[in-house]
Length: 203
Image (cartoon, rainbow, N blue to C red):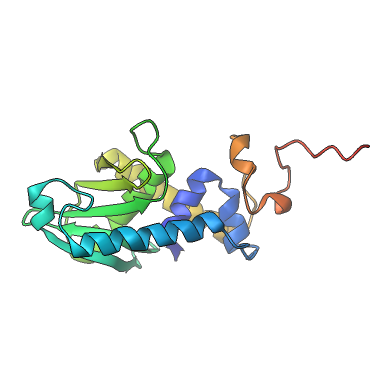
């Protein structure tokens, strides 16, 4: 069973799936991850204490709120812990917190499909249809809505299949074509065919 975070990592670089699940390389301490966890806890605490902490919609403010919702589906082969689930009289709305800022007021691609994977889990767990969700970017205090149609569902399911195939076949996939992503990657030193230039050691 893979995790929703694997969907995000796959879109960032498929090799991360290979290093995590096939080679089982331990991840070094990640200060950005720790900062993100602390930010998640802070936002969650505010949302529990008062209405309108991240939403300014009366219907959503009055809705039932569930935090740290653990879900898994044997049908999907997927599990995850959703930051925040809003339940109104009409719908379930998954919300994912991100420490950082939106991409020019829009959502980052890997965040979009991570949220879509959460939506699939919500549908399985609560026997419902999820029509929309939100990413909350804490740095610019922006909520970006994503609508879930047939195309995003199909693509998300395809990604889940590809991730499972990498793990089953145990074959290292091609990495990202975006060299900027390699700079701070914790797996850089293990990466065969690293696309970054080698450091100049000549004196």
